[in-house]
Image 1 (spheres, rainbow, N blue to C red):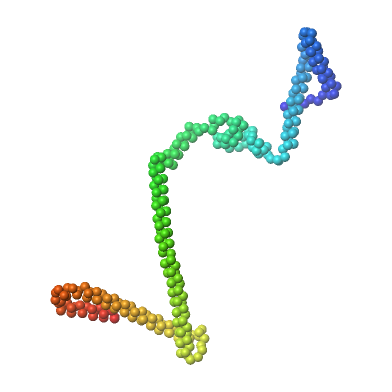
Image 2 (cartoon, one colour):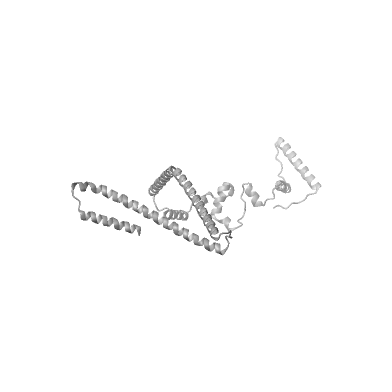
Length: 293
């Protein structure tokens, strides 16, 4: 940085007068073919100082104008980054000296970063590490990977087709399922209604048993109602047992009729053995007795 030196008005006027006279004498001597004298060292120093002063003034003026124009109030590094310049002149952290950061900076700013573009290429160590990773992470060849991919696609397609078939089959059964749901709902409602009617009948029977209106929270009412419910459950169980026996008898009769139809052709050709018929009658009677028990 140059030191500024203030000059008074007389010095400045004498300096410009000297420069004017010198330049005029040079022109006149050039016309008449005479050589001018060499300028004095003091004049050369003054001209050099003037040039340096003008350069310093222009730089200060530019800096002052830039400071006035900067209305963003950003930090210097943020502002330089926004303008596409290198954010830091010197490294502010160990990260700024890493190869990754420098590559990123060169990729963003290019030649303005002032970095050597050769840093963007992989080193031998990085290439070896990358090859080792490829061998470990992807041990299969390209052809094997293609075959595996095709097999996966084939299996996925088969699963999709199977799922579509299941959906179509279920859609065909949709109406039947709706009907079943409606029937089950009606059956539950019917069972609930029958149970309620049965309970109401039991309560009415218990009240008739006492001969007067009794509170359902009375202990006597509860005991009598419980006895009536036990009797009702016993009667229902007996009716179910009889219904089951009747179904078994009907099944046995149908089996006997089928056996009789199958044995008729053989009876026409050969004489039947009376002992066998007797054994069949005995077996039938035994089965009927077991069913009754």
